[in-house]
Length: 520
Image (cartoon, rainbow, N blue to C red; front, side):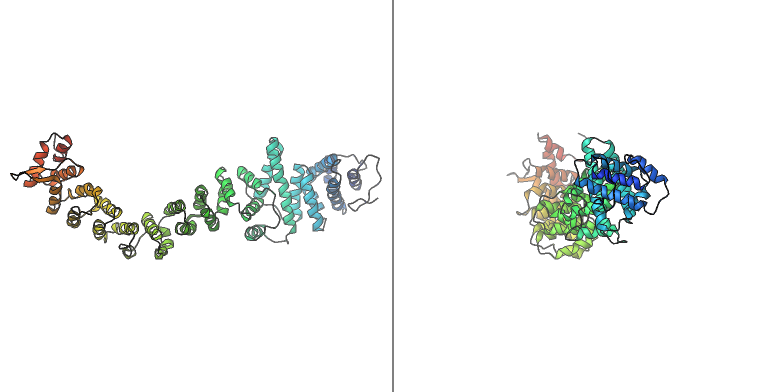
């Protein structure tokens, strides 16, 4: 009688199923008259015997035929599959490889691997995966072997939930060998993975749950071909955000770093920045992995995003990349939108880029004060243009521009600025909130123009008898008195006002009029 696998078996006692008959014929062809021999014992006999010409074919028929019959008789296949699994675990790897190689039909090989992945024990599935890699001339890489060993350990030792998860990963490896068996010899699996990531359809899913492979690889720290195929599958499905979630939660290992580098591409970063809201923790992972290569998609988000939070986040991350970004962003100054120009000028200043004064001078007369402020601040940091920029700031009508100039003047004001500031502080359109700051700056100068401005704010005119009167208590008065006490103690008009201040009952006025360093 010929079985479904294509070889003859003898009639056996009643109660035997087709799987038992396949095993009996296998044992007989191996010189074992006892059809009840265990898988371990049969493997031991075959390992010790000199290989016969027909031995690989006999093993192949037994292995291929058994998994085929098991699918047809699932209810009674358990003991027979356990026996076959035991044989595969204890047979020499070369014996299994030779047997698998003896089958020339790729369709039969693929069918066997599909069934074996579902039916055999986990140790047997591991042995089949390794043997198939050698038989089909696609050896597994060392990292892949490491991944299989670690996952196998989990499958055999952990609790039920973890064991089931690990078993699914290992069975996926065998499914992956199907893809290997389909490829022409010599084709590089890594290149195939990369092509799959960019093609309209990934040929042959690595597993219905690629994320499980990735999570387990990150936990064990192992990398390999299967991991990258799973990554390609998730990218193709538009699940890059999930990949970064895995990396964010993973331990800091070589595997997590390698995965971050693999998925951190300009396209992925651009996609992440296009979401609303943006997951900036994922963006930070990409920026860290990409370095200066992250600048272009960040600039695009800074310029084109309609979401202010996204533009701000892109700005902050561009600022961490340093002056190397200057050539990438300078061209954006041609943009007519005020916020684009403002952000670019601000970034150039933030990263300390070496900017020619002519670049910023194009915008000192811009209609939007926010652009003028950023242009001025670039000019204020250049020793050649500092004083002129400071004068422009003080003469401006916008409070933000004036504030930028006065804040800079605290550290870098020269006497050439005093006449303009002394005049500007008396003008009606000078913002009141900056008077105290301006008076503090004038109080450092020994120019008589500064003196006149201080006297104006310290005096309330004269009495009917021509005697000077002290101005009412205010922040401006206190600032003016401090300036007079610093440099004009011996000037007649200043001395009269200081004397009156020292005789008041208001302690803050008396303190402001005291010469710096004088004892109470």
